[in-house]
Length: 261
Image 1 (cartoon, helix red, strand yellow):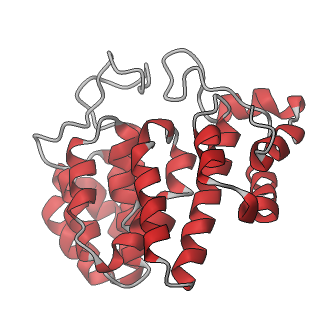
Image 2: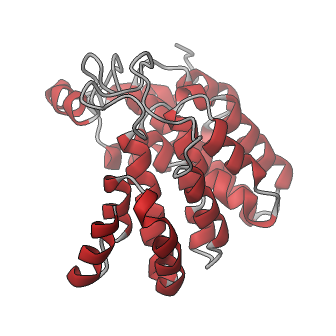
């Protein structure tokens, strides 16, 4: 461990063994589960955020590199939250070169962004924000051909940044990728990232939930567009994905869409 890595030192100082077992259960680290083998220090997210807020200004990219390669889940999260903070502040100062360095770092380490919280707490605040005024084909590529479910989840969840700006077309278009018959992100029992309870050929539960969540968020901005999307695709959508997408609809409307699934 580098002696001058204040982020790593501060995170390790907050280790709490009493929380480890609960976090391991919550993030499914058991054999055959999606977080199999991950290690935890027992640090909850609010504590991690507090550490990042306190020391992000003193963290170098070399420090971030050491943290993102850590075997500890919470240290990897701290690295990502720190990266988001650096990216955000650079944007306010119009430092596009620094922002690009943050994005390049992020994309170079997607193999370390290997659980849903690591994805969701970083991707749209960084990658999504970066792409607001740029070509977005990268997200389509990640969704369609990502190396694992985490890269594919980055592809859809990053569109939250667009949804917040009332730009909904990419969310609907990328969601459609996950519904197509030739989608490659179905569950493979040979893949370490999987659930023993899931049937081969199904779209992974964590992708179903992510797509449904983003569709629901898009529907909050424009319900008519969501209904138009669902009118054409509800019959092709996996049940969990559809349930998440229609969660805010009145019960009679939910029943109609569920009857098509």
